[in-house]
Length: 135
Image (cartoon, rainbow, N blue to C red; front, side, top):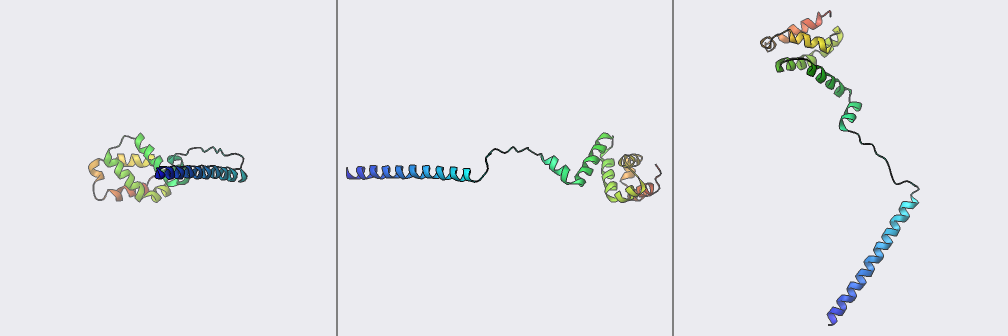
């Protein structure tokens, strides 16, 4: 009987202690919140997609997106697409210096058959065409 009485008293004390701590904690939280100087606690955040961040911060990404759109709009075989990317990466500076656009590079690559495109000296031939390109 004595154990039950002591146990009930301890539960009463623990309850009072927990209630007091909860009230003091909440009061302290509200005091800190109100004394921080900000009247508005609501902030509007506009979601930004990963694509917007990549496009706005990386011009190389924009260039590759443009290349993919140009390729998708043209009817090319997979070997022609692969050769297009290869030539664009290898001879991009030569293309720029000679005024060859991506559309014109597609036309140059499409002039060759798939068998010709997998030959060993095709890159030199295409470079020669790019260097002597007059539109």
